[in-house]
Length: 205
Length: 205
DNA sequence: ATAGTAATTATGCAAGTGCATAATCTCGGC
DNA sequence: GCCGAGATTATGCACTTGCATAATTACTAT
Image 1 (spheres, rainbow over the protein chains, first blue to last red):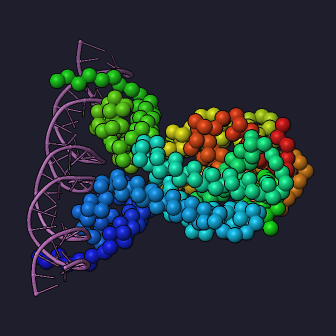
Image 2 (image 1 turned 90 degrees about the vertical axis):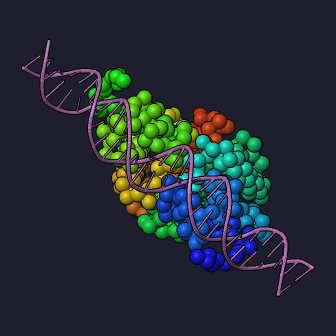
């Protein structure tokens, strides 16, 4: 029996397998995401996964990395953008709670991996790094906005604002994903902006 | 070989097995939570689980029910309490983001089950019911507070406030659990109250 | 062309999985 | 005391799982 297959550059194949893993997790859950299921979904043989990843666990960690990238990528990209501090914060918020990030599938993936964080050091490390990066970007944005307002609050007060801001973003993202069918995305975004305007006592264009 | 064991009333045994299942999920993850692991953790034989639950899946759904009870129990209990609308809302918020609810273990359990909701109808049903109950309690509380303030806002505006309030609660709970070691619980609670005071433009004692 | 290299498949195994079944034991009612 | 009911254990089976191994194939450099 002649095995017929097409070769793919290493990088693409790896990315494809990670994407297939995410599909499996979203559709079948972590339990149903077996090496065989991922391989079948990617249209390759089982053994190929072990050729590209040291272990199934390794593939899962990479899938977690990709998931965080999907979630924090859009907002973090805003930071590099040109614009006033206020405008950037506004777009940062919108990018965090709407668009491709506000997808039930994404929440499901996130939840799957978060549940692994406390019991698997490899996941914990990824979580710590990426979570901090997002938090830091958020803090910087707040600092810039407050500076532009001429408000030089103490570090303590600034931290409070940062925590509250993050809570609104996280909470709206969560709610939006959990009831994506019922809630209008624009309304959701508007609520987010208004809420944060009140919290920080600012106006975001 | 004589098997020696102590009998337990059906209800207690069931509750114990559910608790053992939660322990396993928190310590080993959903993957490590096998029938054998739960039985070992509860100090009983494997077969006993099948005697008390129709299937492992059934046990998992019951464990999900228990988890939601752990999370929404304390705040929902506040609603039945005596006190002014403002005072009740304040305690409701505190019960939602501090105390036994603000536990990384609880978040981990919640995340595990939430990831099952989209792929398992049994979980989806439990989710829908319990989630709605919490949301409704929250809405009623807001309505009472606004009424006490003499503010008769339209249903649309009230819904916005409700969504924002929920977001702050969910977000603070999430953040608090994710970084429970770093954040002081009292500070967290204070931030929550202050944030919601600003959002609703009220004072909560 | 051709040979070497790495990607890919095919196959099998040892361990673990949920669950069915039958035997055994504990306890309450008489 | 003892007996029936059902809670509990012991055991095994069919199936799945991750992974190792060896054979096979496609691409690249020369």
